[in-house]
Structures are given as C-alpha cells and as structure tokens.
Length: 125
Image 1 (cartoon, rainbow, N blue to C red):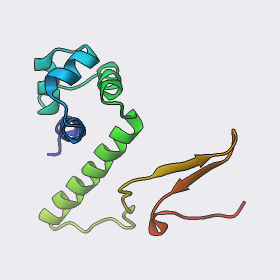
Image 2: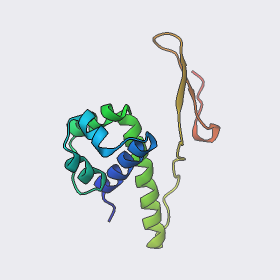
Image 3: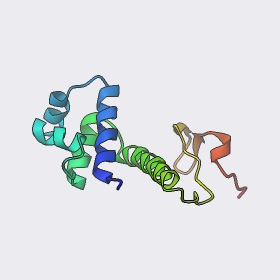
C-alpha cells in the first residue's frame, strides 16, 4: 500500500536537506514543534493544509511545487507497484517534468515557460 503521508514526508525532508537546514530551524520558522515536524517527515503524522502551508512558507517553497513532486513520486510508486504485481501499465503515462521555470513575465497575460519539448503539447491560438 502506498501511503501519501510517507511520500509527502520524504519530499519535505528532501526540500529541507537541499537547503542545508535543520529540523530545528524549519520547525521554529514554521512555528510547529520539532517533534511533530519530525513525525510528518517520517510519514507518521498526517499534515493539515494549514501545517503544510506553514512548512512551505518556512522552506520558501510553493505548495504547488511540493504537491507536484509528491504527485511524481506517487506516479513512480504506482508504476513500481503495478510492475511488481505484473499488471499492465496504463497508457499514456504522463512524462514527468524535472523542472519548469518561468523565464519572464511581460505583462498581466503573457508568461514564458521553459519545459522539456517532449513534455509539452503546443497548440496555436
């Protein structure tokens, strides 16, 4: 069984470690107890949306970025689970984006986004 709280905790821990920050620093900034944050990172506690928002703010990470990474992890876990159970993989499988960055914003309605070509369907308007 795939536990969403465990995947979420793994992603939160990686985000924190990428920044070279300690549990103590993030828990203080997010105003959550060190023990509770530790349990969330280990997938032992379910985090509320309010708590996730506070942790994302403390890590300076958008919640959408966090959830996208969790979604990608979940997709991989489901594929691995399907392969282990010898079930056919449903097609098409959405290509994963390693990163998408906003390159420029030139007005209220125009945004340039850079992404791998194979992951983008372009439709002329």
